[in-house]
Length: 169
Image (cartoon, rainbow, N blue to C red; front, side):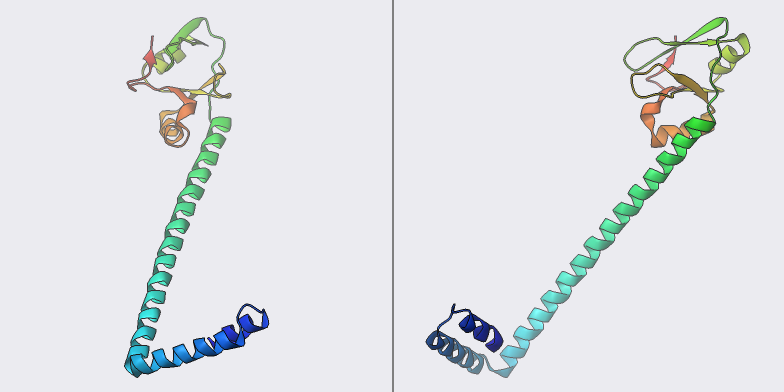
């Protein structure tokens, strides 16, 4: 405390008279509180400091866990984008039109041959959007990969058999 008083005096924020008064008040307070009172106050300050440090460590752990969860989610999204690039079957321009309904009620279609139409109807493939939202570029994806894409990037899965919000028309 004396060092702080000295700094305040040098900065002309505390007069010498007021510094002596504060020093006297501090000595009187220490004498009134006594040795045990000072030790108790010191222990309370240390306990408060330990509590604050413990809370800071807990906050840091939570923030680190949140970062780890976000990192894993980003890695999973990247893996799903890679799946959409490499594992999607692009429907051809077959003689049959296979219709499916989107969330907005529109009915896009895919040109497929008869065997592909049966496989789609039986749930062998899911329909995924390959382009940005609103585009009508679709591909077919294996259900095992479809579940993974649905969990990581749900807006890319536009039709899946047995899903209540989607279905063939």
